Each structure stands twice: as C-alpha cells, then as structure tokens.
Length: 300
Image (tube, rainbow, N blue to C red; front, side, top):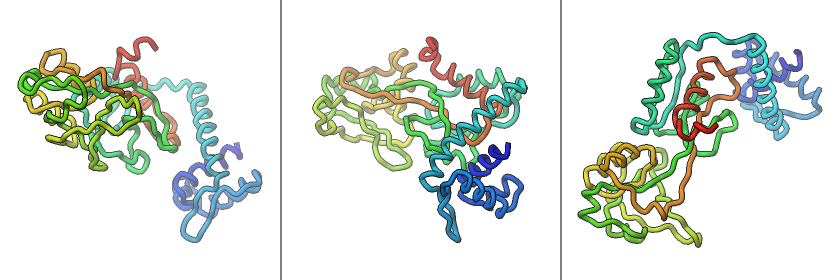
C-alpha cells in the first residue's frame, strides 16, 4: 500500500506539475510530496522530474512511469468498485462538452434523461477545443483520432462528409458530374472556428495530386446556417452525413458527387484518465455508446 500511495502521489505531482498543488489535493505539505518523490526515485534508481526553482517537468522515465501508473491505478479502482458492489443509482451533476451539430444529440440526451432522472446534465455546446481537465469537464464528445495523453477515450460511431444541394438549386445551376464542375457552382463552406481555415472537401486523390479547387460563395463557423442556405437554393455544401439524413429523406436536399468522395471520421467520448469513473459518467458512456449511432452499434 505504501508503494501505491507513492505512485498516486507521483501521478498528482506529474499531472499538476507542482508539488505544492499536489500537496493541496492530498492534504500534505509540498515538502512531504517532495520527500515521497525522492524516495520513489531512489527506489527505482531513476530521476522522474527535472526540477528548477520555478517549475518541475517530467523526464522521459517520468513520462513512461506516468502512463503505467494511470493504467495501474485505473485497474485497481475498477476492481475495488466491482468488489464493493458499487451498484448505486447514478446521480449528481455531469458536466459535458458537445460540438454544435444541430439536433444530433437531442434524441440521445432525451433518452438518457428519462432513464437517469437523478443525473443533472450541465451541457456546454461549443465548437472550440475545450481543455477538459483544466476547465472541469467530466466528459466531452469530439471528432477525430487524436487524444490527449491525459484523457481516456471511447469510440461512439463513424460519420462521413457528403455534398448536398437542393433540387431547386440543381435545377437552376445544373448537377455537377465531376468535381471540376464545381468551378461554376456556388459552394458553401464550413470554417473551423479555432483556426479560421476552411474544411477541406474530401475528394479522392488517386494520384496524390493537388486538391480540387472549390470556389467560395459563403462560409460559416457552424453547420446550421450551411444547411439552411442549401435548403434555400443558395448552393452546394459539404457537411456530415448525419446532419442531412432527414432532409435527404424528405427530398429537401440531394446528395451529389458521392462516387468522388473519400472520407471517414470518428466520434469519441473523452474524459480525464486520472479520475475514477463515477457511476453517472459510466452510465453516460454506456448509454451514448449504444444509442448515439444505434445502427452502427447494433451488431456489437
């Protein structure tokens, strides 16, 4: 148990980059944290931190130990909860960061709230990349494969970018047969709010040549205006398939150039790896994993 306590102390010091802050969390003095780290370094025979008068940083050996400690402490926590029969009703506040994606999350959130009425959801909708740990979020839903080393992740489902336009626009401007035809069309782009860059339209590049030039008639930092403009006969836009599925089924939008597109991306739930998973967070992860994209998860 002394070894486990030392490893837990090391994790707090490594994640906060401060013996003083780690001491506040653990109810110890900074000197006590420093002595524990020194004993651990002597026991392992390696230096875990670079120390200066103003800051500390991990050595390569410290980085390696941090990753191992996170897994070890997580597994011990899981075993302890299982043996203790932690079947308590999930309750309490759950702070969630979600991207602004129209009505994608509403049905799943409604089902979750009905099933877990004692969980209070605090939802923050934003297209910026929030700092989950420092901003105090319990969980965030993100797209993409890259995950911060401080975070755990779980895949929720896949999506694809598609091109759509209204029947009225295509009747007026014509339907493009190949990507080069877009040169004479009004194209509505998504602009990443954090970088200001336009999202690339994912045309297949068999010869790894330059991207197909796509003119810009309008750009927006969220998807809702692009869908509204497309349905209002303003042009062709490139958006995730799940955002346009109802409009395509209803005939308000038509997919174009499907055979020339090559795109697949993933939705993930991510949460701080240093925390034990509370029952309310476990319930959220399990419910969203099964219900956000039910057709994709039906065979799992």
